[in-house]
Length: 520
Image (cartoon, rainbow, N blue to C red; front, side):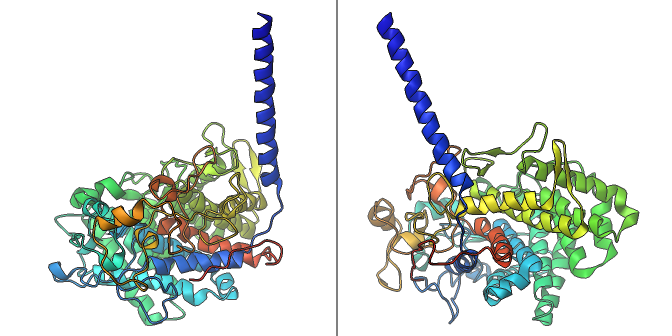
């Protein structure tokens, strides 16, 4: 009996000791004042989009381990679908996440273009946007036809090949009047409308072209309503439209209003506010699928600007739902706070959680600016929050991403002294086509490259991987695609945030924190 009691006491002491050690570790990195070079992070985040390019690469391509790919895309269907982006570590061109990526890149430039220019990255930001919008112009072959996807996930995932060696299906799928896809049409319209704002001063002809396509796509999506994954069923296992299409139609209308200043688009947002869920849905995530929080935050800005007083009663309700999202992120909600890991990372779900943290960081950052410009504060159920507190939370997410976390690992590949080396990415994990042009077959890549424990031979600079689990643990393993795969829509929201933080003068002295200098 006495021995059992002693053993029990010892176990308690051990558990207490372990807890205290963990607490000290967490306290160390949470309270750390470590600075980061936001300019370097911005530069590398934009470089990532060059890695993901499909099509014929330009003369000024900086990621030299990549080469031309997908040069016959659309040929079987009699259309030119060469170009655009691969969304992640495979080689399917999925329209919905690609469009969201371009929308977020454009929004970042709209808000923080001057800061991006001050960092010397403005041209690269515009190139990243234009690589996507050039493809959308091609894919929108007539007013009521939009090519939704090239390739399919099932056959693509059977192979592990470099994009330059692709032998998988490049069949293209479209939406049209008989096979509608309002969500895809809406998001693509939003992307092109937002991009038209970006190019308005530097390339007015291109800006008008994008706006023309955006208006046609919005009309098409609104007139022929339906979910795109019901028309293009091969996408269901990869990018199913869970939220439906109403959020994308509101999203597109708001961006068209910003691009044109035409009342008809604002009236659409007001008239459909309730029936489309804009003032009904209170959401705690913002993603390639769920746009409500973005819609609500853009509508809130209209309210703060005070230019549309006749619609204040509806805009106030949009603002209320925007505040729901923000208060949940800030842990100032009464019972619906977004979870956080012990290390402080916003945690939505297990699969590719970093996309939600990066998009939240962006929305928190822009809303903090909106509040500051309007001299207002955020009213949450558990207290009033000022603009600085919102920005501090956004900054904490960025710092976690860049290395201030329990793993002491930067989840932005190529940044800092330690980062993922075995990213789940076909092109990065196989010897570069530029170095070895010998053909690597469909299963040969699995046999000779996928299972290797060595680091990837090519560095996927600027990619934001899926990230750690709810306990801040990360396995740097190629096979763990939930954690180690990176996506374009993970990195896209960070471009604007990095620019904002760089502008604030908080970039570090490079001599203070060591950084691996990688070749591109």
